[in-house]
Amino acid sequence: MKVVLQLVSECNVKIDGQKVAEIGKGFLLLLGVKNGDTEADATKLAKKISGLRIFNDENDKMNLSLADVGGSVVVVSNFTLYADCSHGRRPSFINAARPEISNPLYEFFCDELRKNGVEDVQTGEFGADMKVSLLNDGPITLVIDSEDLK
Image (cartoon, rainbow, N blue to C red; front, side, top):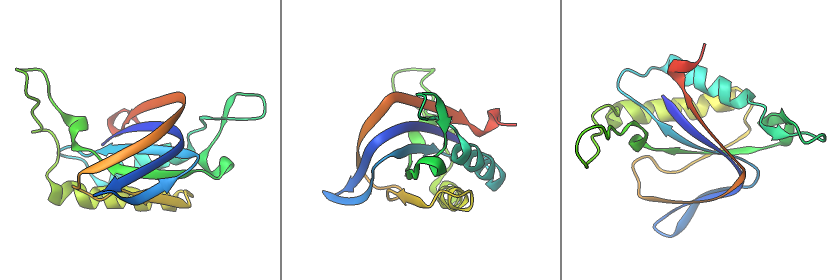
């Protein structure tokens, strides 16, 4: 599993012009699921993200977590994170897991964030055409792959 994490001051997701998610301070997580990913990957990734200390403390040091600042999360499924652009000009998405695999893992990942103390976890709609608006704070953007986590 792969996540593009953006620290945001605000974020919202719209589907067909209707707002389905909206947060203030927190994370926008673009989540990609690849073939072979498991619930163990989701658990490991959720634990890492929920504990990340990337919010500034009173000394302007990255030292606070989501829980420390009362932050929220928006999780948006994004199979394009596993695009293969190595050949030709049209990306291949053969490495991205099919919806019948990735959707349950997406939902499991969101539940794991909640189990790890993230109180406000909002989502887009799996497979929908979403319009995501955000105000990146910092800007701080991290790419985290479950394969790289110990």
